[in-house]
Amino acid sequence: MDEGTNYDQRAEADSAYTSLTSFEFVFILHLMKEIMEITDMLSQALQQKSQDILNAMHLVGTTKNLIQKLRDDGCDSLFVKVKSFF
Image (cartoon, rainbow, N blue to C red; front, top):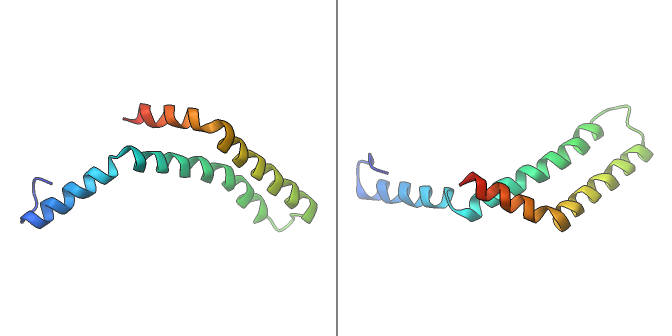
C-alpha cells in the first residue's frame, strides 16, 4: 500500500487489503475450511478402488449429516473462531 509507484497501485493495494481483512472474507474462509475438512474424508474414501456402493452411500449420508450439523449447530463456534482470528 505504501510502496506503490503510483496512486492507482496504492489504491488497488489498499482496496485489496481492506477486502482481505474484512469480517465477511475471514468468515467465508473459515466456513470453507470446515466444509473442506468434512468433505475431504468422503473424497478420500471414494477414491479408493476397493470401495463398494453400500459403503459409499453410507459415507455420503454421514457427510450430509455432518454438514447439516455444521449448518444447525456450528455457527456459534464458527463465529467464535472468526472473532478470535481478529
